[in-house]
Image (cartoon, rainbow, N blue to C red):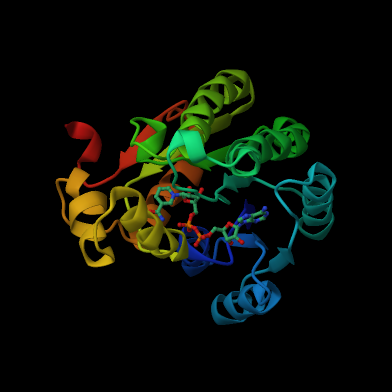
Length: 256
Ligand code: NAD
């Protein structure tokens, strides 16, 4: 049994990835997120699939809470083999009106937390000569869209971080890759619809077709199962030579 720590796994993509890992019955899962029913979600999946679970509400902006989550996970399961840096937030606004505190929160949650957590799991991965670090970036880790300056900066940043960690981890069988999803229908995207309508000055009913899926060749949201299966490949033994990549799972957005 290996152990996977997935940040932001009590909602959306993180929860979808956790479910795909749980279905294999090969992983203990450390859940994390700010949802009030996080413990309940973790316990429910643990029971449904007969796997070991832990829940932590460690805040991505508080390094000491992140280190405690890792220490508690190591105490409970003996080590952390897979780290999935997934927690993230968004804010849509023209740069001239972009609130300073939103910029700092986005960089802190989407980028800097991955640095703290990588540092915290590194020693154990190095000693056991196995580690898989998977960063959930975005299509916006590879290309930009207007009105998302902080988000695009954070996601390009995490793609750069991924490459560096891949180089440093290579001698120890620690691989590091980024997954770059297109649009996935989660609370993060639902919340954006109103903001996008306001910023682009169009009705909310037109945001999905005119703004979101407009850039994807495949006019469907990316599914949680597809992202979970991609993460499972990157977590496997086979991913020892897949490292330093940023894999678009974006319905062809980046092909254009
Ligand atoms: P979501 O809002 O459904 O889930 C985000 C999770 O992160 C939640 O569990 C939340 O509690 C947690 N979180 C937020 N701030 C936190 C903090 N300070 N400390 C601890 N946890 C915190 O969003 P999602 O759509 O599932 O997004 C997950 C990741 O996928 C993000 O990094 C996002 O940028 C990325 N992504 C999403 C999409 C999409 O279309 N939904 C596309 C590409 C990339």
